[in-house]
Image (cartoon, rainbow, N blue to C red; front, side):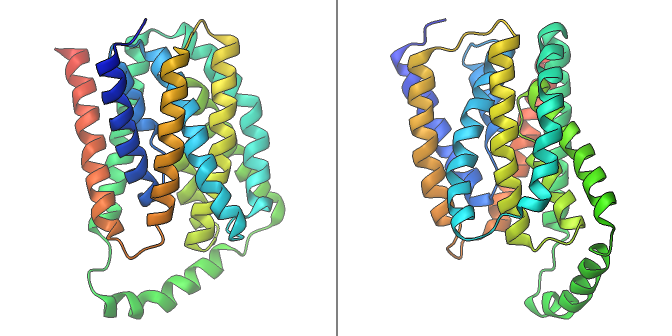
Length: 274
């Protein structure tokens, strides 16, 4: 379908805004961009393909800074990327055969899970700096204990996580960062390195998902819309990753993001069951 000039402007502005905000929070914006494009009149398969394309550029832009700052653990990232290569095409194939309503329902469940998880972690953070300092040593000890794990077991679990992330990328059009980050923190990666490694992995899962959908499904993207959204995404991700290094209140940003995801999920469920 051809998009009107007014809708093109609005969609680019909203994409720019959401991508910049999500970049400040340290995540990609696919789970917001997908329903946004869908509600502008595109079918769900096209929307998820756009989400993967834009996620590739947004996380890729952020990853450049992470790589330069040595904030990527390639030893952990490689097994996840390798296994996702295998399962991403499977997800794409299923996405073309599963009813669109079912895909939207699954996507809504994913948003609900991510939104609740974000709000839960944000609301249960330590509200006092003193409390954070008091618990720092305990957290550090737990992280060290979690790193006491055989290399073989680490690789096997990483392959499993990569398989799940790849399948979700092909099926729902999401990079899987919300699943990867907790896994990396569990294995004892320092927070900044975990975030940088997650962003690096999502570049590949999103790119593989996009290529799989373009090659294995019957989807065509509007080239004008695609180019304009890519430009908006790159600029927004650059600004967002830059602002991320300032003393912004990331907790409030994450709270807003969590509430936004729950509202989008509610909208999806409402449209499905009304």
